[in-house]
Amino acid sequence: MAKNPNLEDGFTQIANELMEQVPRFKFNGTHLRIILVIWRYTYGFHRKKKDLSVSYIAEATGIYKKQIERELNVLIDRKVVTVVSIATGRRPRILGFNKNYDEWEDVDPSKKGSQMDMFSTLELEGSDPSKKRTQDDRSTLGLEGQERNILKKTLKKGIYAEIIGYLNERTGKRFNHKVKNTQELINGRLNEGRTFEDFIQVIDTKCSHWLDDEKMNQYLRPDTLFRPSNFDRYLNQETSAEQKRDPTLESRDKEVAFQQWIQEGNDPDGFDWSR
Image (cartoon, rainbow, N blue to C red; front, side):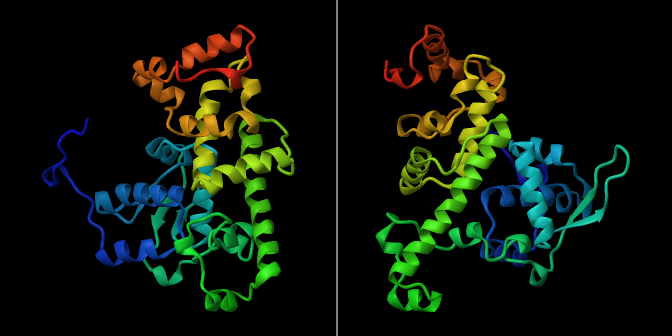
């Protein structure tokens, strides 16, 4: 429960001009959360720089450390976050926020023209019809008919590789993003409006539950995690660390019953979550 926050207890002063410019750039959810943490510990203490480790930012945001490291490097490459000094000994590098937004890159320079960059600017098949581009829009992009469909297929291949690559990184496994059933599962969730960040959250959440569990580890796989009957539920579960803070969560989401079901030798996809 919120502790009745008041300005009298402290506040972070941000220039309106910065607040207005940040939403105009292509930042994903992780980028925005990193920016907020940097603002809090720099401008929030009336200073322009602060020693901030990847672990510290991960703890402050509740996001997996390797994801923070990856996305923080993107912000640095895009000249949004500046490295004032590198890490020395036990002291982490000192970071600052570049308030000169004219210097910001709207796209990660290392990925300009990449599949993932284009994927963020084009809609998938089956998206909201009200958001479809006009004929003039398509002409401007130079993407017509069959050529446009080919590009969409190429963009999807990029997100398959990103999602499955992250799953392999977290689990140490070697799933192939080219497997047809895996692609169909990812397509299904994307067409339901799910985002790349949602896939990352599901992977992180279930890894926190099952990665160190000898019996459950085998179910850290695409056909379990991305199945329509599982994905939405996993997306709304707490991580194991959050469950420890509130023990009642485990009984509410029936995780105990599910693990018992598995231990009895039953198929995890046959478990009845409505019981």
